[in-house]
Length: 416
Ligand code: PMP
Image (cartoon, rainbow, N blue to C red):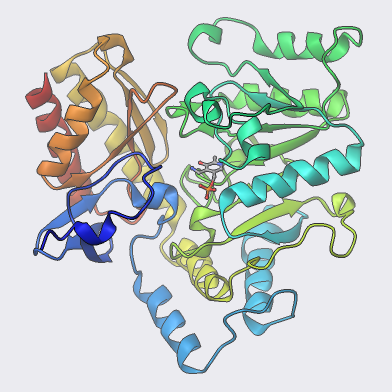
């Protein structure tokens, strides 16, 4: 029997079909039933910052299940929820002098974005939102309305209203004073653009092709939000939880958003958990106004506490700093050797090699397939999917990084 037959009834709306059946995973490796294993430079699209099945996470989950811990608790105070909130406050927020309330949304990142947009609109009493060209915030209609990618938006087949796109300092907009432009739009009350309740942005556009916003730009956006009485929502779903070095990606700019969305690696394990951090004065929800059955998965609370401990125990910021320098240098050298027209972008442990200047749209798929054949899982990103995106677990070893980079170079050379 064809081993893939049992998967035929699954709807295919995701990007890539791997010609393998995966069975187990540990650290930076995923194993298949035929005994082969793959180095994972995709890490659950950023959901596995601490790798697959870290020992501490596994141990905590097993203990919790063995003691018949609550698996579904809705709005109840549970032990698991209490521990998670305490850990988040005491180990992450308070040391960074961040004063936020925590809203559990769920189960997935796009749900956190929806809640963030909704509370911003409610608090400010305005409908419009400013989002950024090339940004990615999720696939449900509100989040999709803020997603600046034509391909993703096309399938909505409906109007995606009440969002105005502003320029991100990238590509054709790189040499434009985007801050002056946004300021001018906001200052011109007769322009026809409604004043927004909030601006929603990523400090590094991940799906958008690894586009790193400059620190000064982020600071100026914060200042613009203050000047015009607009809330700043930072979507840290993909680049939060240590990916950029600090726990939050906005730490590098020394700014404090009004609202933060987190998901993916906040559960420490790959289990679904999505949260919104709100400045206390924004907590204007009425009871039952924004609810849902699967908000705050109890197992994800347990593994999330372990994830926060790992962030500290493993000194993730230091690890990321060292590995980032290595990956950045190695990739620059690879580009030099393979084709210097390719463009390198990145920070922390998110790196992108942009193949757009090569003007060969098919190349990227050949490269990712070559990588897979050589034992490396890696994805592409970017408005037109032309960016090879490196997103290994933050706990990846130097040897694994070297091997992955070697495979990338070989795969590029073979494809060209
Ligand atoms: N925001 C950002 C920045 C993301 O990268 C993603 C997922 N790639 C989302 C939102 C949506 O999260 P999810 O896929 O879990 O709904």
